[in-house]
Amino acid sequence: MSEGNVISEAELVRLLSLAGTSSGKAENGDTAEEERAIDALKILGRSVITSALLLKTDAGKTVKRLSKHDNNNIKSAANATMEAWKECVRKEQMKKSSSMKKEAGIDATDSVQGNHASAAPEPDSKDSAAGSLSSLRMSSVSSMDSLGGASTPSAPKLKGRPKRSGDSTRDKIRDLLAEAISTALSDEVPSECDPCRVAVEVEEAMHKQNGGVNQKYKAKYRTLAFNLKDPNNPDLRLKVLLGQLPADLLVNLSSEELASDSRRQDNEKIRDYMKKECERGQKATASTDMFQ
Image (cartoon, rainbow, N blue to C red; front, side):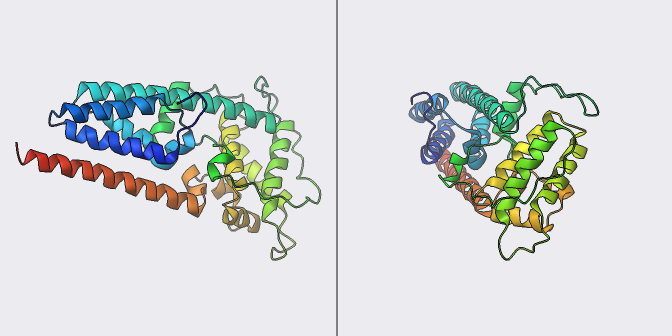
């Protein structure tokens, strides 16, 4: 697979299933199945993968489980795949971070002064990538391409701007949040629902939660912005705009909890599928054991 060409979800699931099933059969000493499992893992390791795919398919957990296999060759292949995927995630996070900082007017070299807390040091890239592979609570922001090509809904023109905080970074984020929330405006929404006011409440809650403008604050903004702009997540925007989801509660939700219903359903279907495939592999192993 050429560099930059991301593996498809269908191919990823197929290879994971093959690796899982064959590795199960290889526990009985079946060298042919061992080779199939290793070949599948090698292909996976050469593939470009995104954090969105890892989140949706639980691929990281599957490969991590194989990295503890009794067969040393399978274990080695799984570990190599894990390391390759960590590097993919690390590069993606660096690219996304740079892009979002530019969008929010945050220069990577900016230092926070005055009443704001100093920026926290960047987390270790390996630890960050490993967390992305093993947890559904990833906060890394995926591109809108992962939504199946859907486009962000257009926002009505705002009447005015959110209240200024006196800090350029915070004010820029308030503007961007207001723009995202305003896409929920419609004739059915009461006129007193003001996206600018809500954006200020959300930004202030983020600022309070994270102790100032620091790396955690910026990461939380990126997560919220991604989900609020998701064209498949109108319910989230509307609940925030109507006050049904208060700012102090909103900023404490995980990426999974912020996701749209369709995204959560897709995640659940993939997890169920992978579980059944693993169980099928285990049953095949048990059946073979009966003849030993």
